[in-house]
Every structure is written in structure tokens, then in C-alpha cells.
Amino acid sequence: RHDLCQRHTKDTLLTIATMDKVLSRISTAAGALTIGAFTVNSCIYNVDGGERAVMFDTLRGGILPDVRNEGTHFMIPVVQKPIIIDVRTKPREIPSVTGTKDLQMVNIKLRVLWRPVIEKLPQLYRELGTDFDERVLPSIGNEVLKSVVAQYNAEELLSKRAEVSNRIKTELIKRGAHFHLTLDDVAITHLTFGREFMRAIESKQVAFQEAERQQYVVQRAEQERIASVTRAEGEAEAATIITKAMEKTGNAIIEVRRIDAAKEIAQKLAKGRNIIYLPGGSS
Picture 1 (cartoon, one colour):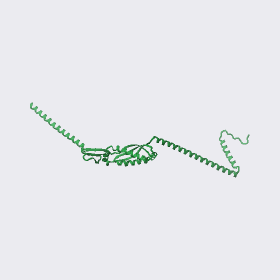
Picture 2 (cartoon, rainbow, N blue to C red):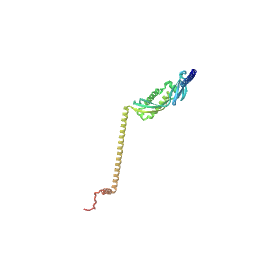
Picture 3 (spheres, rainbow, N blue to C red):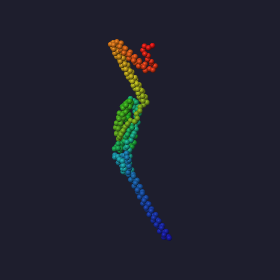
Picture 4 (cartoon, rainbow, N blue to C red):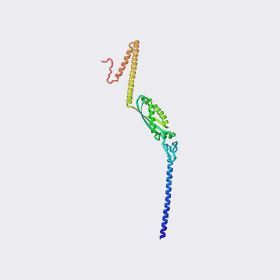
């Protein structure tokens, strides 16, 4: 029995030692895989759709000149750091309060669709950082609005809105290109004036409507005058014709008119219900 117990104990110890070695190897392998995975993960980075990346390299003097496109790329940990930049077209509203040529204050808003120039991303990031739209668009937008609006008076801003919008768009695209920004569309979305100007516009509209009404009254009176003159001329001409006819025929024309009048009276009386005709000469 003693020998059997010793053998069993030795087998158990050998089994435990074997398992301990196996577990130790598995732990070592898992650690190596973890370290390897961490190392590989720290050496790659992804650039998603609609994005680009610029690389900051501490050994080569900062931002590298090339731009990384969409996909997976390699980098040197600690030494290199990728900066991801969104290059999709985005909207931006630029408000401004400025003065017109005739010193009227106008509240105007622009809607701008913009995106960065991809080839200039390294320079753009080096000069302005990642919030370049916040630094550039409000500044150049107000500058262009003030310079263009000051060339028009208040009424022209309303009547020539398309022309003003096109000029603002042209000037803003030029200024945006200086900062490596592409402006796909620029449009005026809001345009209002001060209360004094709006009251003046309303008064002018009322005066214009009153002037149009007076013009209509004058035209109507003129038409009535022309009609009266025409009737008078017709009656005078008719009187002249009658006079000439009487000179030729004597009283015959008067008798004809009298007969026509009698016929007309007889026709009207014939339609009455309470009219009774009596034979001529009866008492």
C-alpha cells in the first residue's frame, strides 16, 4: 500500500507540473499575442469616407506635405501622429448688419456651402488648425458683405437682389480661395431693413397707390368729357341735318316726326291693361 500511495502521489505531481508548464506556455503565448496586437494596432490607422489625413512627424519637422486618402495606413508610434480632417461639403450661415449706400441699416444673412481644398490640407492645418472654418468664413463673409452692400442703396438691394447675390458670391469665392477653401454655393437667405425704412416704404406704397387712383379718376373724367363732346357734336350735326331738311321740305319732316311719335305712344298704350279704345267721332 505504501508503494502504491507513493506512485499515485508522484503521478499527481507530474500531472500538476505538466499542466503548470502548459498553462505557463499558453500565458506566454497570449501575452506575446496581446503585445503583438497592441503593437500592430498602434502602427496602423484608418481614414473613413469623406475624410483625409495629414501626418505630424516629430523627426521630420512637423506636418508632412502629402495627404493620406481613405483607407488603412501605417505609422510609427510615438514619432508620428495622424490628424483626420473632414473634407465633405458643409453648410454655414453668415449673419451681418451693415449699411447701404444711402445709409440705411440692413440685416443680411448668407448661406455658404464650403469644403477645404484637399491638396492644401497640410498648409491649411499648419496655418489655421482644424477649426479653419470658424476662423475664416465669418471674417471674409462680413468683409465681402460690407463692401458689396455699401455700393447699393436700400431700394436697389430689393430690386437687384440677384445681381447683389452674384457679386457677393464672386467676391467670396475669390477670398475663400486665398485661404484654400472652395465655396460651392453662396445665396442670400435673409434681408431686412430697419423700422424707419420699412415705415418709409409703406408710406411710399400708400402714396403710389393713391397716385394711381387719382390718375384713374382723371382718365375716367377725360373719357366722360370726350363722350360728352362726341354726343354734343352728334346732336349738333343732327340738328343741322334737320334744319337743312326743313328748308327743303317745309313742315313735312315735322309731320313725319309727329306721326312716328304718335305710333310710339300708341304702341305703349296698347300694352296697358286699363286702356279702352273708342271709335272716333262717338259721344
